[in-house]
Length: 342
Image (cartoon, rainbow, N blue to C red; front, side):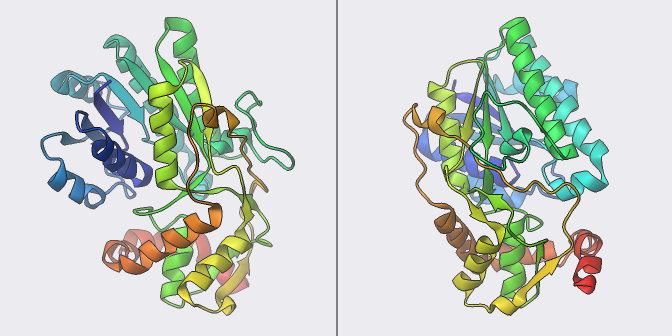
């Protein structure tokens, strides 16, 4: 397992994973396969191309394009697929669910078929804690039932089930990880921590959904990448592993950490109308992954603060995004009415 196809590798988690793996394993070769939608950017991998040019390649392509997927596997003699490619934002899934079904379900099927046809050594599906639905008490274990409550989480659930079905039906060597809320460098600023950090830098309001008491596990992205690495090398085939800090905080606590890190006033907090079906709490039992020798290095609070500092130090990365028409249209559609009503 040395020649990896990282789908969605120009996105937030995928680009961090690509960099992490090339730094850790000097004999690995990685092909990033990415459609380059709004959240996938070649800029996220600029340093990777410069530092690891002889062990790295980029292919622009859609995971729903079976012919191009198979051609890429053949051309680069790949033996492993790690699938990050997905539509991921819950808010967007409420307004355009069709794209989530296309990418997260049909795209997963295409990749699984390619892995089966080419008899790859491993197919790894990167999933989410949201497949468990809201967990008002206790923690979600890998054997808990699925209770998705948004088109996003439903599409990811379908991808997980398809992955497990290929293992049961054809013996495809698969593993799945379900991550908590990731934060860190290169996260598109529609997600809450970079959204709040960049808004606060510009003294713009931070739109907190509802009372802000929703509970989340904010995990630093490199802890997540290390967890996937451990599962790839030590995980049992056909198994699922949760990846998170094992602790949580409320969204209002996260918001206050963002403001405190930047030295900004809490008067920037604006409570706005909640989104439909907003899950109240996620919490993961990560003991199964810890049993493989993995541990989380940063707490939720440390992960949020470190992320905020990155955005403060890397305005050249995010300002072109937030000043673009595509982002402005999304932000106005999602928040302007809510902010005015607040």
